[in-house]
Image: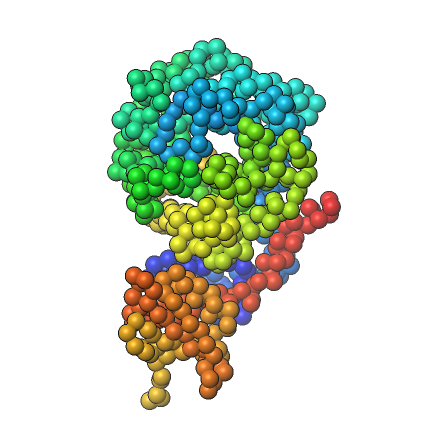
Length: 474
Length: 111
């Protein structure tokens, strides 16, 4: 053999072609015959195709010891999310909420129930623990319930963190996740002053949003209040980007992705993350009423993505967030932080959540499981355990060592591995253990189908689609 | 013309047997290929009593999934892909280890 094969994974992409990817996310499609020649070692190393293969570092005629440092540098860049350790710290000041979402995953408390409010002592210890993270970037994200129902505690944590940061000097950011309905002008002015961005939920047009996310007070019109307050927030902030929105797909959302996207455009958002239902909380308990087969989501996703591409072609800049994330992994050498889909998994080492009672979980989903008496992913409690015990303990080491796609069954050989990630919490919730079983794993089915579809679009070599994809990445 | 023995045999209703030659396929390759079918069918794997280089694999229907003649054929194709992975991995597996070691060298130095 006149050349050396370098590490790659492969899969039959269709009847005529193989897809090959390497450790650092480079890819190439080969006709079946070319693939066999490459593997057998009798491909002409002076042909154009071999030059393409070599440029992707899937084979080389150079000395391997010269190629390894280059691939290692790229690999380190792809894994640079590991460098800083935990930067996303989600805090639950209260479980109280004025919504009554059909897929609620956290066992919310009613507005008059103060039994699940965080105390100042716990809040102080939460902030103390957060600042023991070595990360130079600290993002504190307020989750709930709806954190605006205990805005005094939100303010206390923000100010405590700002005080700590006078000494720690990290890049400190805040985000509050809220349905917007309880925010008033004073609250928004406070959030603006402290640079606390707002993340909200929008499931689509009025009837759909109100079906998925009704308020507990049936006399109130959720969507109307949402829209009024969105305008108020943007007016005070003077910047449309201050509010981002997330959607969740329930059974009622299927067949309506175009309307959902139109609603986002109408309300001035320039991106959407077409997100399927997670199997936790009510979403798991009332599966028959609100869940759906993953195949249906995939079909809806493709329709939605196609529609978004058409919008862009017609001049409306609008991003589908999940596609943008995957495309960045497929088309650039850069790392992308996304706690739910990275390898090793981001649980605990990229993000962690601090519950109202001081319990620390590796992810929001782990907290959701705890609501239903599964405490497997609880790292400890800020009032009882040290940072080292929680974030350098045996439990987190065990979880992470079970959450590298490079060595999970079937993931290790999967051609999409460089773009994908592991989710031990979801595996545990859906399949009973952290490793999971890929042939029946819904997350795997969904992610593979979407990556495959993006490859199909890239293979078209349509300059307009490529331009749109690059505009999303940039 | 040489007599080629087809490696797939229908045993009885809802059971098919595949003979896998260990001279062609590694044991870990067989396991990797079988793994993708275990949720669909019951699978039995035994070494042939008269030839230790043959592994007999029996697919049996499970719940709603009926075994038909296509199942062992899909399995045979999967074997080829897995053996190819095994073959290529033998060529570059050590390089993968070297890349990862080199990538994380700065972390080890800091330790």
